[in-house]
Length: 472
Ligand SMILES: [Zn+2]
Image 1 (tube, rainbow, N blue to C red):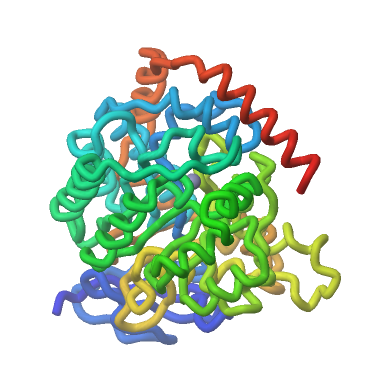
Image 2 (cartoon, rainbow, N blue to C red):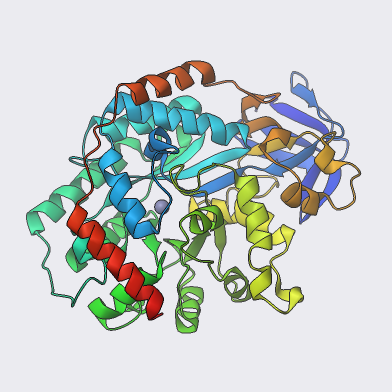
């Protein structure tokens, strides 16, 4: 056994409260936790007396390519926002790698040790573009599940613009796309012990039923998570009823797509029966409050989800809508956003629930429920050390609440992933952040080919959104 390292004397979060303890890390695992541990000869000792130690935060829903378009897409309802954002997507591998690295640096320095990166690039699924993103995460050292997006319906078929006319999937195209994701998974899943692959149909309404069923089958075959956008907007809820005659969640349930390995991003517009179905299935919901506010999508019923015991994770979603990448912001919004809708203040999501969502909930979204998300012997050493002298924690009255309500990414001192230190005193050790920022500017200046959105489609969507507002 290697002597490992010891984080000495921090305030360690265990079972929802902070108490002074040492953490002994050997290889990629936490070997022991407790006060005044004896230090093996040769162990590296890092004194952190007065600082806080929490499990690594997880950004469970995110799209790294959008980092290249920060600030470029006008804020509008999702359906119009998407129309403007799709033409800006690039398939240039170097640009995608740079965007992933730039995002990884921000995430790591903000205490995020793991991420689910849902990626759609123009052109074929297979190839250099996806490998470039995966290699960026290997170099950054953070834990990342990469989720290449599957979709095979044109935009106009995904929205309630008129009566639904059935579409049959193109079997050869579906097989090609599924095969590409499977080959990507075989190349990267498990790489460096930190890279995973999730199967990601963009949304049930964005796929033919044949494509969605093939995606579910692939996720089961690979033994990985099925990650999909679900009920992000009211238009999606209406389209589901037009297309399948039942709610989107009821459709997923009757097609056997809901399971503990299903990750549903958003879930802003479920009805009470949907919430019961999700709870019974064990599926994980990723709450993206900042994105949902920025695009006016609505508020996911977080108190209802928590009351039903649904595992909830937190995400930032894309830098083109959120626009930031702060899990601290997501935690604060998760605990405060729902209060005006909930007259019984005893049901308000607590700071502790938000912190659990950002850590253990995120670990579940990465398929690591039994291996990450808490500080305990045997679990992976994904650890974040926070500056105990930061104003947010002075005086230390309720450190969980102060972490969620007052702290931000600036309180992050050190970050460890699998026992490897990736951030020291706020500096990311694995990424040359200034050089990557220069690359971001260069890719931006070299120009993203921006096609004009389809004007007729834009008008039809605007009319549809207006109709939706008149008849909720
Ligand atoms: Zn998204």
